[in-house]
Image (cartoon, rainbow, N blue to C red; front, side, top):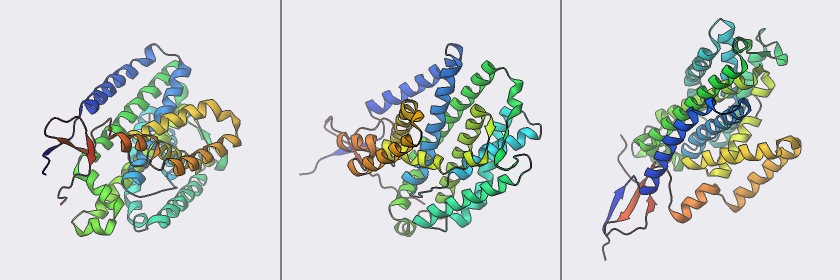
Length: 345
């Protein structure tokens, strides 16, 4: 028996979720007028985590490029901000310019790094981060591990600085998520997932493997740089060993594994969970880090798809229309996700 069906992208759930996200964005933009400075600082931190999780998930979850060296770009984002500010550029203009410069730096780096595969790429990225760490230490402005500060921010009073940083972070997280959403809905999204599943097979059917991998590499680098610059704006002080620590990539991995590797919504959910866990248990010191590692291990074994990935797999639910769906043409209510095959030239 032949069952007729139609392929669609938008569902009632995804349309509602997208509308709610737009309303939430507007509401958050008004928050500095009614919320305290402490509240704004906390939400800014959450935005930074969302950026880190979303961009690492784009690199590893969609592109299959598992990196343990994204702290290289996180640290560079903060360092370039410091450098530009020292040259006399307005600190908030420096926050905007630093990710652009770091993304340009990442372009030539992509050529040698993307020649590495699997574990070689992961370790190679960690080595790259250590090299940048050592190079930054040589800058007299930074004074080795003593570090320096973004003192130009002192030109703004505390309330103004907190509000401006919040708005910058809100704009940054919105831009990152929108760009990623558009990429995943385009043929690039299909190409990325084909490369992740089988790079050789993807290339054999016409996918531009090298160009697609470079694109997502640069995107992830820019995202980490934005997060590093934002963290500097909230902390003000800059110490290389803090910003170039592998701890940042560990956080990214935890957020994505818990939320759902390879799912748009999962990375955001993982960032929220990590933010709440840190707020509740961050003061526990080393035991907090041990707990994070144990939780990530348990989640990997019990729910290898992550929380949202598991829910989506069992219910067929997607909050945002990044993929395609098959609905029975007779009006049936059941919707199941499908891999949509299209020619990628």
